[in-house]
Structure formats: C-alpha cells, structure tokens
Image (tube, rainbow, N blue to C red; front, side, top):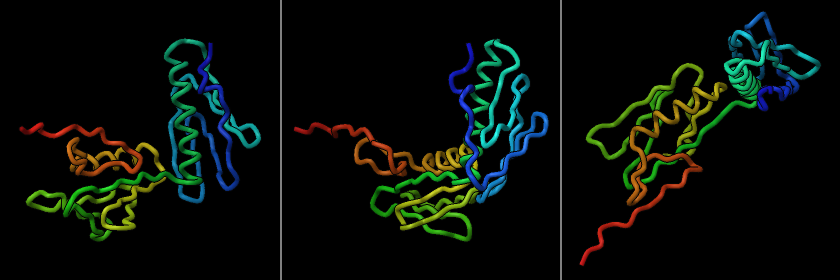
Length: 179
C-alpha cells in the first residue's frame, strides 16, 4: 500500500530546471532557486517533464515520508515558477502599516509601533495601508512570516479588529446583553 500523494508525479513546467544529485533535489526557475534534502528511503527520478518519487520499501515511516517529500518537491517547483503570496488585512480604526525600508512598521493600537523586517527570501508589498502581501518562493516561509505578522494583533471576536488573512472568516460573538 503506497502513499496516495507520493505516487503522483510532479509536473515540471516550462522554464523550471530540476537537478537531482543523490538525495539532494534542486529546483531553479524564474523566481529563484530552492533545494531540499530528500529523506532516506525515497528516490527521485526525472522522467521527461515529471519528477517521480519512489519509496525503497513499504514500511509505515517510509510511506509517510514519501507523501511528505512529494508535497515538498511539488511546492518547490511551484514556488520557483510562480511564487507564493499571502494577503493580510488590517481591520480597526487607526490600525495601519507603512513601508520602512524593506520592512513594515505597524500601528496597531499599542503605545508603540512594531517594525517587522522580512526574513531571507521574503518580500513585503503594501497596496494600501490596510493590506499587506507577503511574497516568496518558499511556501513554508511565506506562511510562517504571515502567521508571525497576524500574531502581532490577532483578530478579536467582538468587532473583528486586528490582522487577519484576506480569506479568513472571523466568528463573531454577541456583546453584553445589557438591560
């Protein structure tokens, strides 16, 4: 019984160059270069314009790593070709962001401003003061950076004020009942 995800081939789009050297996998595309160390027990082979990952045995840990490795390789190929982006919205009166060099300075209702510098391989974009776009080629790094920014002022359930993902729905609570 093989991994359902792992047995799917990863299609290599035009403009992406893939190199496999032993357990080292490297993808190079228009957006940049990314590399990954494929776990032991998994072998990757380029067949035409596809990367096929095969497990060495049918043991449970190998099957788990098979699906994981395939997902990471697919994410890398997409990342170097198209890139990843997460959009965050800032909701609340007086809450805003502005570019400060390569970083962003947030005014989030605290007594001080918060400056966030982008990690390596990540860039920020501010279409307007209430919207932040986190871009990069590494899916995990983009998601983690966006989560760190959201954590600065997570949305609260009463008015929905805070930093939220653009596609996130905040469950609202009723306020005090009153008399």
